[in-house]
Image (tube, rainbow, N blue to C red; front, side):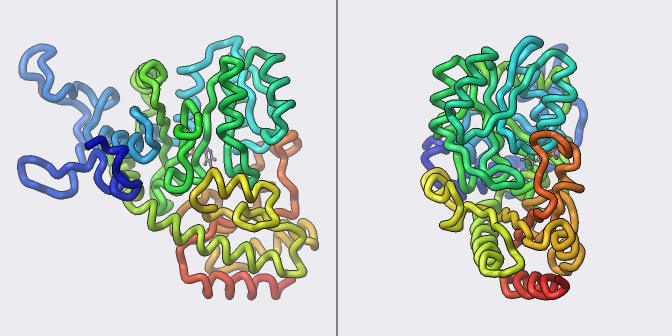
Length: 385
Ligand SMILES: *Cc1c(COP(=O)(O)O)cnc(C)c1O
């Protein structure tokens, strides 16, 4: 039976995770070896030669990642940005052009504009909900890649993946979706027409704030070959321990995302009725401008909530430093709740650009703690305002 016929959680638990044949160890062993004995010159066992080119623990993760994204090939990297860098260099060359969302992750914009820009790859940020602007930017630049993040960070905007895929394909461009925020448990971009899915597995897939990693998933053998070559030739691969931790996290992604989504909905609802709050950005709220699209495109609304304060920057800073269950820290997607002040933390790199974020905004990564404790923590922090 093809793995894609099975349900999401069955794939997450079993894909690439067959028990070890010699001992029956149910959890496949973690392989640290950097090199592999050859039975004669060039006579390899199971194709393994050298750790940068292949490692059984990394392969197990890659099989699992391909299965949960309904892809055919996945590649695991040492970080999300390493994956993005390898992806862009595999699919674009100097003179090519990328259209990306104007609220892309700050590190992605920094990579595309400050690093790859210097190597001759152009970019145009656009509002991905403005399809006329998107078409115009693609047509004006003979764009090679369209880059979408949905939900976006930190404004939680939702992009119509199927519609943008059609626009990209009509112009001969490929659609890349950064699926970090939704995770494959809630959204399957390849099924909606995307050509490539990219992840910071540091976030929900790893899920426990204890490993940095990235991944690329595709369903086209030509793209797969190009990306596989760059992964091997550039070498930004994940190490065996990182791959093992990521695999362990991915097995429980489905159950974690259910609780993240439930808790985030409760936090967003609580925030929305507070007088200190100017705006709440959460796709699960009916007041969200793309709520209907999110309902159609996702099977849950995820754990990320952003909030803007009527009291401006001062109010945002006071709450950010007053919570006790929510920890003030960058990153997201772990089981523990985190509080982030994007304009000085995660998004400091886009300050002063058109991707800059409001100074009265906090981004909450809502964890899987008991909801009563999360609300009580916010209540005591709001009492300081
Ligand atoms: C964190 C993040 C990245 C970068 O990933 P790293 O693992 O930190 O290199 C890319 N995209 C999004 C949406 C992210 O949140």
